[in-house]
Image (tube, rainbow, N blue to C red):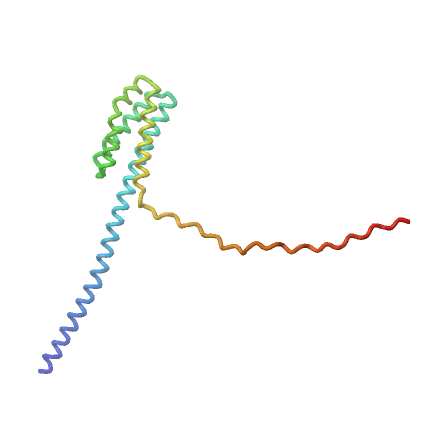
Length: 178
C-alpha cells in the first residue's frame, strides 16, 4: 500500500508543477501577444504615415514645377501623384483616408487639363490638396508617440530679502577755512 501512496503523491506533485508552469507561461504569452498586437498597430500607423508623406512629396514636386511655370513637368508629376493616390486608396483600410483621397482624386481631370493649358490657376487646387494631405498626416500621428515630458518645475525660490544696507563711512568733514 505504501508504494501506491508514494506514486500517487509524486504524480500529484508533478501534475501540480506542470499546471503551475503552464499557467505562468500562459500569462507571459498573453502579455507578449498583446505587446505584439500593439506593435503591429503602431507599425501600420507608421507605414500609413510614410505613404502619405510620399504622396505629399510627389505633390510638392508638382507644385514646385507649376510655380516655376514648367507646366509639362508639373503635368507629368501631378499625373504620377494622382496614380499613387489611386494606389493608396486600394491599400488603406481607414474610411476617413479613402474619403479624403477620393476628394483629391476627383480634382485630377481639372488639374491635369489646367496644367496642359499652362494655366497658373492650377496651383490653387494643388495647394488645397497639399493642405488636405497635411491634415491626413497629422491625423495619423495621434497616439503614436508619448507626449513629451513636462518641463521641470523650478524650485521654489526663497522669499526675496532686502540686501544688507551697505554701511557708508562718514564723509570727511570739509576743511575749515580761517
